Image 1 (cartoon, rainbow, N blue to C red):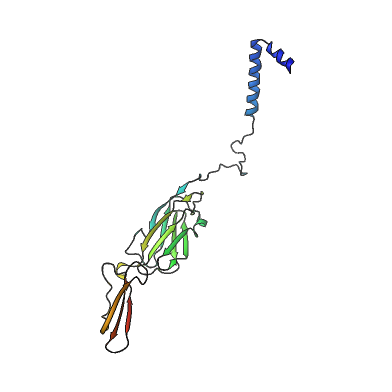
Image 2: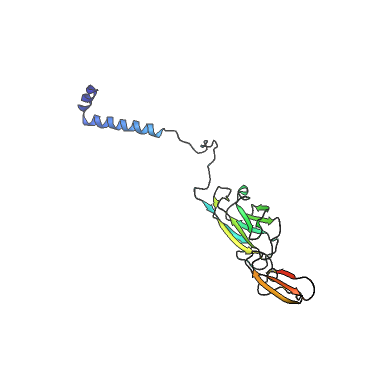
Length: 216
């Protein structure tokens, strides 16, 4: 090793530069011949196509919905829930992550239908809502697009039943009460819909006591 060192040290400057250049060229040649994947050659997953997937943290949104949030009029007891998305939907991610929940009846089961042409999802509950019931639609971030993006979580509420059936801005007319000689009235949210209901009890002049619950 020392002999080679002494011999190199006594070489002329020109020869030294040539030797250094040859060394650098050899090093560059080894680096540039490292294996690469050319266009059209199999990729890591074994095919020859470019992989197009959603990046980490990618999201998509609900861009239209009905019944509209905070709808309080004109919503039927069998109203269909609609949601339109900004990206194509992975339908297998919907059933457990898109929830329609009633304040009185709890979670609704039902039928989901998806139109890929319009990116629209519909849900038809398996039973009617009740008058005055607040319905919540909850779509979690576990709903996915076909490209693997997660949904921006969304929730909106509406109330079921036409106005005249829910005693908003007035009461639905009823027949006159049976005359009583003593009575009492109590107010409370009997059906848990957020509106006060009336309980009326009394003793008529003839017959048994009468108790009535009037749902608002």
